[in-house]
Length: 345
Ligand code: GLV
Ligand code: GLV
Image (tube, rainbow, N blue to C red):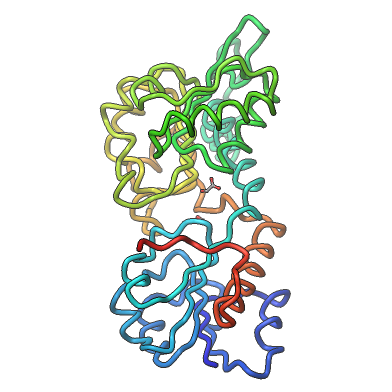
């Protein structure tokens, strides 16, 4: 069987593929994305492929692959880069890699909130430019809003756009900080489902007084920290727009660790400049990776940006790479995958 792999999964994981003598492996030799052009050129006759976020899987790629293709395995939890209808139409299965990155992404979500709240960017810039000697400590110098409540009377609210595994792992950390209120928006509008989730979360976290599915406006108005942890795609495009940002608390922090498309970048740059909210921590940005130093958000002193490394721990990435190979094998053998994406009927 022919397998196309558009990324180098590293010395821990590539042998899982190379050790099988029934597979012909065509692998892009670099850790970076092969890009779609390489994939289209090499995928003819393939039985399966392993890809990552930056390879858009659409009719063009699938037509180039031809009728042998049984499985597409993406080394990512998100799959907004894959045209699900195009796969379903051809009976090609899709695997993704959740769970093994839940804790690493939750860690980086909280990290971004702390960094954005506490002026880390301005602070480190000042030190790195050699300006510490001229910048004397002063009572309110580089102050920002405190992310942890200061006492039990200081009631704080954390808001989640998307309330899946990563959001819930982030919530656990915020409860550790002393948060007692949690609001979320979710795709499902089913009240029974919301009641079920809320009961589960409350049982798990007895100090939480509120966990409630709300409309976007209420979440914007009431949250001290807003975490975006929902899938990308057309349904969530610019869910954080000017209207949302205008309603946020002036001391609030916004974190996007999901997909850049959920936030209107121009609106966020304007909001930060005009002080509608305090700060933003972004792991993902619309148009990435083509984000240059003159990008309006890069220039904002209270916008902390990292280059889509939310899951970049050895534990998560080796876990994801391994899972992507195991999903591929399951797809080739018509077995249940470790994690399979449900395709539209
Ligand atoms: C990363 O963004 C992923 O979807 O795994
Ligand atoms: C998926 O994005 C999750 O929250 O696990």
